[in-house]
Image 1: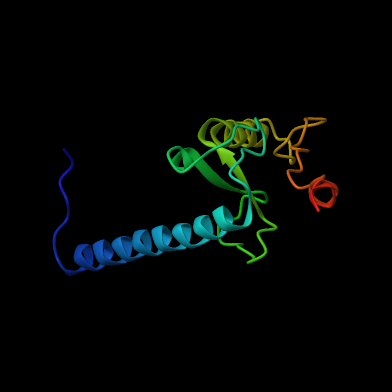
Image 2: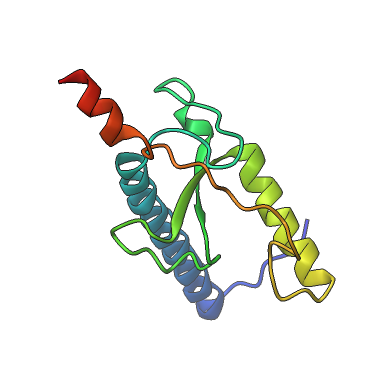
Length: 127
């Protein structure tokens, strides 16, 4: 186990790191809760549906990969299941390692599912 440096500098560093970790958790909780209210509980890639028992497996993906850019309208977010989210970040890392500026690679498919696309027509039929 590595030895830790003690003293005022280490204590200050520990406080700064702990504060940053708390701020990150609070920020994530804020945008996750907003995204879960804005969007249906469906993975934007594999279209798996979630309910109150499984929603913990649904994550918020930042489309532009900037976790600090959280517009309240959710335009930078998409809900992805744990597996699709991991896959998205793996592809992003692979593309970056290959020198491809596009995280999706050339010609890779993007999510096209639009859960509310036919909602207006369906609601008309119910009146």
